[in-house]
Image (cartoon, rainbow, N blue to C red):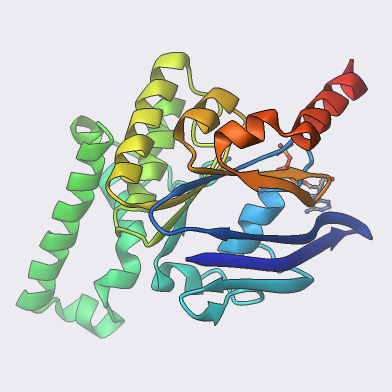
Length: 254
Ligand SMILES: Nc1ncnc2c1ncn2[C@@H]1O[C@H](COP(=O)(O)OP(=O)(O)OP(=O)(O)O)[C@@H](O)[C@H]1O
C-alpha cells in the first residue's frame, strides 16, 4: 500500500534517514522501532509530509508523495496523530473531531453563510460521525467539554478519535501510549487491536516494546537513520543486528 524507496534526509550534514526502503502491506500493522535519535520521528514526518526528504520516493495510491505538501495526505486517505498532541484546546471534543472530517465537508464560505437545508443535513451527519468516533474511544460523556480541560490520557484518545473519524486508508500513529499509565495503555492497545482486526492499515512509532511485539505484523528497525532489519516480531527479537543496536545504546548510556 505504501512503498518507501531509498528515502534520505540530512540535518546540518548529518544523516537522519539514510536510504530507507520498506513496504507497508495493506490491512497490517507496521511498527517502527529504534534507539533514541534513530530517525523514527523523521521517518513518520516524511511520510505525513511535515518534512520533505532530500531524496527517495514515498509511493502511495500510484503517486510519489515525497515533496508533496502535507494537506494532500488527508485527501488521499492518510491521517496521523502527533506525539506532542495537536488539539484545539478551546474547541469542544466534538468540534476537534470534526476537524478530521473537513475535507469531507465540501463547504464554501457562501454555502456556509446561506446554510441551505441539504448542508444542514450534511452537518448533522458529520456531527453524528464525530459523536460515533468519540464513543469508540469512550469520550461520549465529554463531547461538549473544551478539549483543553481533558486529562492527558483523554487527550491522546481524542487524537485517535480525530485521526480515525474519516476511516483513513492509512493511519500513522506517533507514540500513542507514551505518557499513559498501564490501564490507559492497555485500553489504547485494545483499540489498536480492534482497528487492525477491522482491516485498518497502521504505521506505529512506539518505544513500548511489549506493545509492539504484541500488536505488530511487521517491525521495521532503524539505527542511526538506516533500516537495519524488517520482518515479523519473532524474527526481529532474535536478529543479532537489532540486539546489538539496542545493547550498544544501553552500553553507551551506562
Ligand atoms: N529539525 C531537526 N533539526 C536538526 N536535527 C534534527 C531535527 N530533527 C531530528 N534531528 C536529528 O535527526 C536525528 C533523528 O532524530 P529523530 O527525532 O527522527 O529520532 P527518533 O528515532 O524519533 O528519536 P526519539 O526516539 O528520541 O524520539 C537525531 O540525531 C536528531 O537530533
